[in-house]
Image (cartoon, rainbow, N blue to C red; front, side):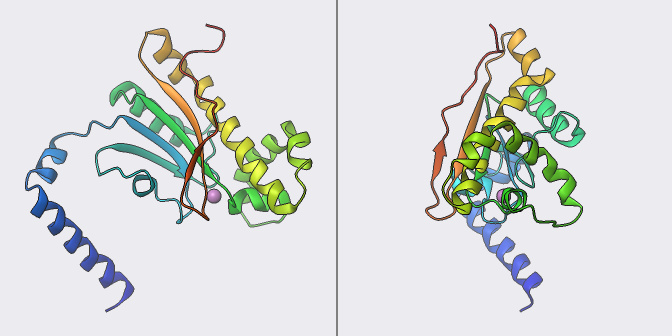
Length: 202
Ligand code: CO
């Protein structure tokens, strides 16, 4: 069986097992989605959003890019954020990075990877702002992990500074923005304790 045929066979088995447990599962989802969470994570294949937090289809809206960046000029990310908050009315936005992120590592090593170098300038900007914390880490791996953490904190703060989040808070809509980091080595998520649930200065 080819790699691609394997995926299609897996899909048929997955669909059958869910329908066996709950024949109404897919028809219900087809009518509407009502997720409570928006996940903004890294595109890394080792960090599958729904799977690591045990959520089924329909329970989490997901946006992923290299190094879980939230850039104020990124229409793609902003559109996902606006739709999730304004239309789907998610209660939580989770920015989840991960230790050992290849994008963050490329920045720390000053290594060129191609077009993505330009995207990763956003992570380099975070490094510049948090150079003391990153440089204090004793090894290259530790510097990468420190910058992974700083990047999550910075990108979660970027979510909280969007007009989308600010407008939601201004109209009294419940919304919390969280910064998490995932360990590739143990499969565990750590909360970085930077949750924001109201506009700065209110
Ligand atoms: Co990554």
